Image 1 (tube, helix red, strand yellow):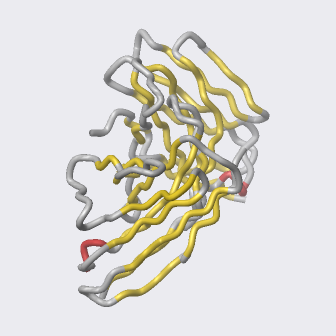
Image 2: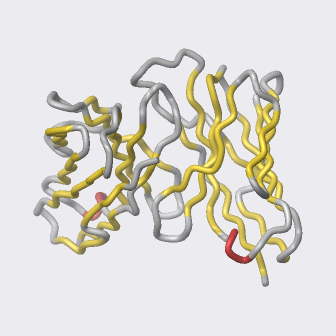
Length: 114
Length: 114
């Protein structure tokens, strides 16, 4: 069953602008992850944020997590044409064992216009 | 990190035939998973490939249709059996340390069934 729901479904911005994408989920989580998928390719892991963390940074990426609202946001600053891709959030349930599985959202299509 | 080689990258197959997809990881990993992704859609987990034992299938997927092997910690195969046009999809291999930590993905196999 789907856990994460991304918003918006599609986003089109100009190069240099910031892109903000949101993910909401329903049940308690151990961690939340963001992945990028370029057209026709596999997914690339971007960032993982744990339930006891509120914010993480990685280069031009900033991820926040609000467990009270069961939501996360991914901010890409100073976007580039190469950021054009689909972005997925994935959640891991609160109880984490060795066989814990990720549940992916439907994804956001980001287009960055040169 | 892990690098995953997946092949074939794409194939066009006839109805009723079978296709085996191979996934090779460049280092020993605890967990390997197989996902299916319909065009423009999210990822759906097919099964967890268990080393030396039968795979663990998700609801809606059965061993007769999607037999999986994992003879060692670095290699797995997924077979799509008795294919129909509904099996046309992207199939993705992924691997990771387990415990809900980040996953590494192969570049996917784009399957078209005529």
